[in-house]
Length: 364
Ligand code: CA
Image (cartoon, rainbow, N blue to C red; front, top):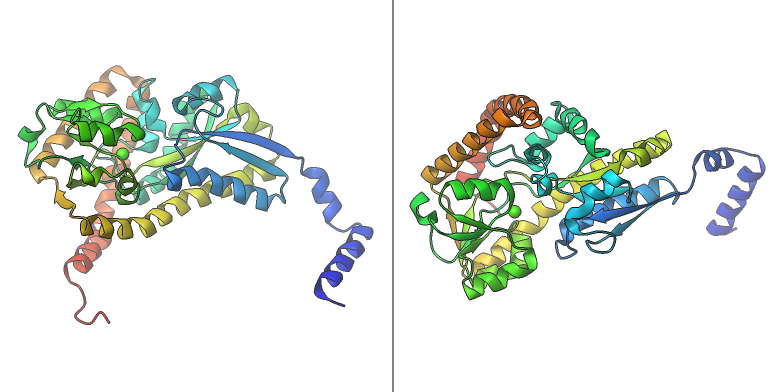
């Protein structure tokens, strides 16, 4: 008897005996959801996070729970997903909370705030530090249940036509940088511009902007910024991590069987970890290629970073004074940020500093 024959026979026997399989089928309804992504397919690593979720969910549920992934414009515009979920016109979305700071700056916390935490610290805050509950309480008004759904890690600090030696060089500088990071840049004298990814290269080439930030080496290389703005700065202090999210309409969530809810949470957690690992695999290779093309890497000066950090925390104090939703999240966020950074300062930072500065004598 060959193997396939044996398997088929085995299945026939257990089905006839009424073991396990029929009971599972009864409690596993066919569920089909649509997911609206806020990310262009060109950001393949980020867009791919929703595909990781959908694939794993289908595998865990034997194909009973299917999610179709839709690019911006197919179901709704990229930045229409919160309205779409609130109205119940789609079951779920993959997005970044900070796209919605125009509705309320408290949307910033889930993705990141300038001078926020790194990816590990953000995960710790969300999964254990009370962040998830704070975000879920806030999201209730929007009929949304949220899950962490990927991260870029610390982003790069953008592409500049000319060197930026200090804060004075930012005066009047037109830079593509969205959100609260853009507001902080404006406080330092720059003129933030909002431009979608596909329009940045041309604006840099024509000189209608002087600088632009996007993501990191892997994504930035594809858009070719190095050809028109060769000075590549780090770190992207406005995105010390960039945590993306799966958003689910609360009514659709409540209607799911418990085992599907658990499967969704597990698949989302996998997508959250997977994206960071994929970026940490792709970025070193892209950075090497960029440097090979003559890109000049520069660290922002400590003075500039200090000025930017002070401006950011002034903004947070002002916002806390006038926005109770922001204040409610800012205070515990700040406390967690302080505590986790003290811990990371010892073993993590000392080890990282040592290995970065002291390569082994024998590496072969
Ligand atoms: Ca960015």
